[in-house]
Image 1 (spheres, rainbow, N blue to C red):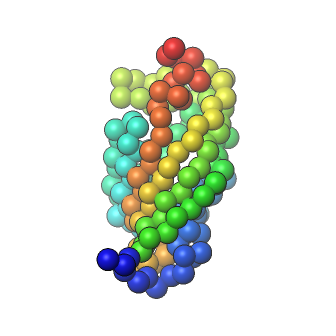
Image 2 (tube, helix red, strand yellow):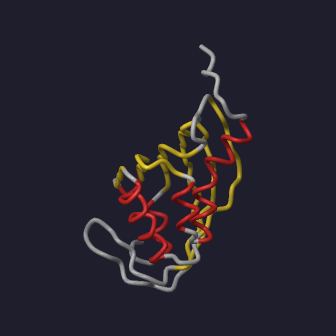
Length: 150
């Protein structure tokens, strides 16, 4: 069965999917808010954290920015199907602040991280904004690079 038609071109969908990640990289929180819907769902599979709604998602992303103030994504590829975009990225950053974890924060290590991730992003085509983002990455790789596991 073919994917449903959208109001946006594949390029517009990819740009909409990348917009919050680019704004996050600049730590431009107003631009992040402008690129997502108020009822956004963010599902961070590796950490088992899921947030719904602008305030909760922003708090989770600000937590990453506190731990890794220079963190940003490099984009490698994108695939569009209907109103869904799959982005392959590499995240890089330096751990200079506390990293929130389920069993408590990990104190800053000063170490650099670099890991690959995949984001499955659904776009609210009538608004051209992200309404759902599922991010897949290997938390073990991050913890190993920080020196907190072997």
